Length: 280
Image (cartoon, rainbow, N blue to C red; front, side):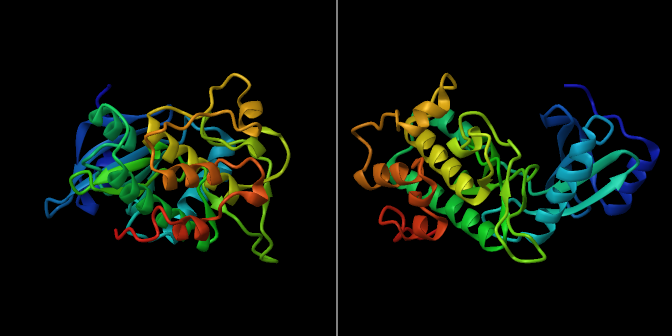
């Protein structure tokens, strides 16, 4: 990965705020890179730098403001903390907690297989609490997946991250729940209603994605292949291993329910017998 090149203005802005950055990125995307940094008192941070000259007008005018709104509004122990954001020239800087344990996919790779039931219960409960909180605050994530769940505290604490597709779930003027036509998210994790091309409820779609995350934690595979994905979703063509705890199977089935009105909502998820007694 190419070394970071900062303008004099960017260097000055970081120095004024007390940050020193390492020049090699620890993560990268098509328009953003993440770097490890230290504060003036030596605390570790991650700094995501978005190159606004490389993003689309739609992202710059719609999605980035929504992300910044979500980051400002949300404050939860299982959501990656963003300490501050600031714009210098054409680059947006986001200063965040540094995830020392990688993401959830990294945990599965290290484990060389599915997580044991007790560990899955704890991690899933943490993710579910964060998503329930988001929905209670009127925010939908719209890109929940294993790569957007970071691990902290010796890989024992899971936190949701990356709010690039997040938005409000309600119309401010009336409080009415919004339906959306925006096809966002990641193939393999998106709901059948999103793939239908019709307006859909993003909260219910988040719950579907949560079910996919649990399925991956339990099997290390996605439940549906991309070939005829929606047809397989609607006919529930996926397999659950016999070894899985029956309650775990039950919550997966109720989250991967193609009929939206029958799918678990987040308050029901947290009340489910598989995780209702789990303390995190």
